[in-house]
Image 1 (cartoon, rainbow, N blue to C red):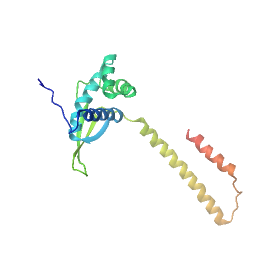
Image 2 (image 1 turned 135 degrees about the vertical axis):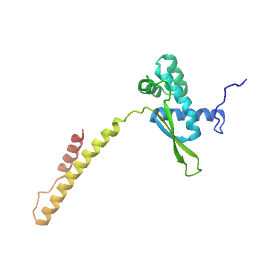
Image 3 (image 1 turned 45 degrees about the horizontal axis):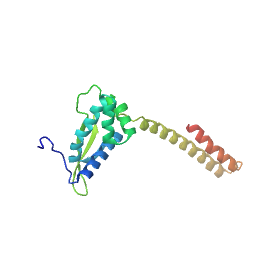
Length: 178
């Protein structure tokens, strides 16, 4: 008998459904937040919660079970070393589904599936600092150009720059950015 064996079919054959579930699981582990249809998001909650439950108790059996679903050692490593410890003291509710609206093409109801405890990306903070440095460098270059233009208007001649000066300037910028 098929008691308690109900699952979403997504109008796909078994192999395609399995591939869809696997790819959505991989995306959730990689990005920790995905946008998909409401039906897929609600069905994926079960699978993601199961993976995180396994990741909370790190042992070989659970790693092998997770590998069966994810098929990537790097993702299994991330799951067990980064995501699992974040939920160590939580007993459920690892994901949330937020409604976004309707898709423009076919008016399918879209939702966001995300982990409740997401990692704050340090890369974004570093990128913001780098962009500020780049803006400061470009503003300094603009000042030099404006000075050169004003000197040119006044009739003050500067020594001509050679190619070597330009190369030195390029390498100086790269060295300062490190």
